[in-house]
Every structure is written in structure tokens, then in C-alpha cells.
Amino acid sequence: MAAPEELRARALHCLLGRDPAAKVAAVYAMADASQQGECVADARALLSSSAAIPGRPDRPELVPPLQVGRRAMNTPEGRAMLIHALAHIEFNAINLALDAIWRFPGLPAEYYTDWLQVAREEAYHFALLQDHLQTLGYRYGDFIAHDSLWEMVEKTCGDVLARMALVPRTLEARGLDANPPLRAKLFQAGDKAAAAILDIILRDEIGHVEIGNRWYGYLCRQRGLELMPTYADLARQYNAPTPRGPFNLEARRQAGFTEEELQALQS
Figure 1 (cartoon, rainbow, N blue to C red):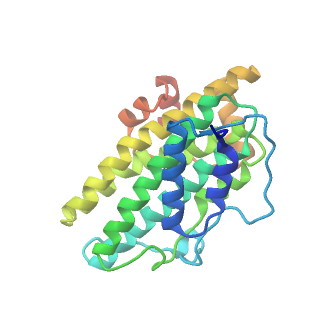
Figure 2 (spheres, rainbow, N blue to C red):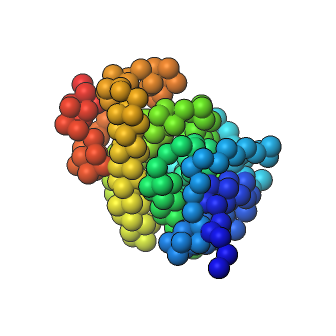
Figure 3 (tube, helix red, strand yellow):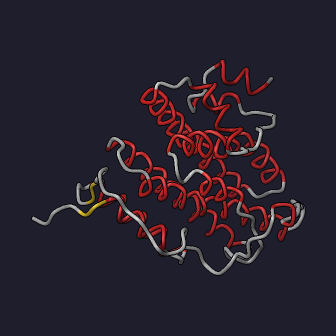
């Protein structure tokens, strides 16, 4: 019987892939192999890459966030621009989950399987949005996009505690707040299929933020740090964006935020 493949090296290989459809297929295959015991993480492996991270297609063109512009829901093109923006977020989210797997050694096995689950679900979200975009007559890459999510991934490459604090607990948690208003706009515009996709995304993203919360708490305990003061210090150190309301408090509760944290958020 062949020895299991090493999960973290395989995650790095997936991360370097540039073709979105191939990346989605590779993540699905890796998740299946992991479930079957054919792909197992070696937490002690020290990996590196000389290739550009992450692997991306030539398009979309990446521009500063303010250049992306607003999307009018009363036109098919405006709705397609919004779906494209969401697809771009999910494509970046696949990459950030893969990066969380390969980059940080020395963590429990459950950490790596948790982030593999996130990668699998983000790949599913991207595929749903890409397929829906095609029904509107467009493809991923047809519009410009920004890269603010990945910029925070790059900033936190040197510390898994900062990564857990500022990517899932901050940037992805903002998605919990943004999802219901976007879903309402799409539904009111008559795009019930897109609204249903956002329901799936919200359901899964609560779990992704919960994974970030759980590992942030684990790492704080390992280092003897207090959760809230440490988070505030990291947010200042890395110049993280300040979350702005309205907040999806129920989704944040389900994702593991404490009442004390939610009160601080609202103040």
C-alpha cells in the first residue's frame, strides 16, 4: 500500500495553480484524498516556494478598490458585475485557505483539516458563482477587481496568530455583515438564483469564521495571551480595517464571537 501524500505540499501545489477551473478540481480531489486517508498533513515539514503566490489567471485586471465602482442592480450588466466581484472574493478565499494550510507548521492535525474544509467550500462557492455568471453572459475575468483581501493575507505571512485574527475574524467576518443586504438587493432585482447562492455562502462562511475564531483562541491560550487586548494590538500593528455596521450579530454569535466582543464592536 502506497504511503499517503503530504497534504501541505499538495495544498501549496494547488495554490500555485493559475487556472480557476483546474484549481477548483484540484481542491476537490485533495479534499477527497484527505477523507480517504490518502493525503495527510506533516506539521513538521518546512516548505517554501520560489513561484509567485498565489497562482492567478491573467484576468481579472486588479485595480485599487475605489476604481472598481458601484454596481447598479437594475441592469443585467450591473448584476453581473456584482456576481463577478463575489466570485473574485471566493477565488481569493480558496487561495487564503490553501495558504493557511501550507504556510504554517507546528499546528495540530485538526487545524489543517479545518482549513482544507474551508478551501473545499470556497471552491464550491466560486464554482456556483462562476456558473451563474455564465448564465448572465459573462465569465470570471470579464470585469476589473481589487485585491484588498489578499493584501492582508500577505501582511500576516509571518505569524499564524495575526492571520487568524485579521483574515477570518476581521475580513471574512465582514462578509457575514454584507451578505444579507446584498442578498436582498439581488432578490428584489429578480435574481432569485443569485440570492439562493448567497444563502449557501452565508451558511458556510459562518463556519469559516468560527474556524478562525477557534484557532485564534487556541493560539492565544498557547501563548498565554488575552483574546480581546491581543486582537486590538494586532489590528493596530497590521493596520486592519475597522469594522463598520450594521452588523449581522446573530451570524457573528454563531461564528463564535462572544457578547463582550460584540458589545465592543458596536461601541
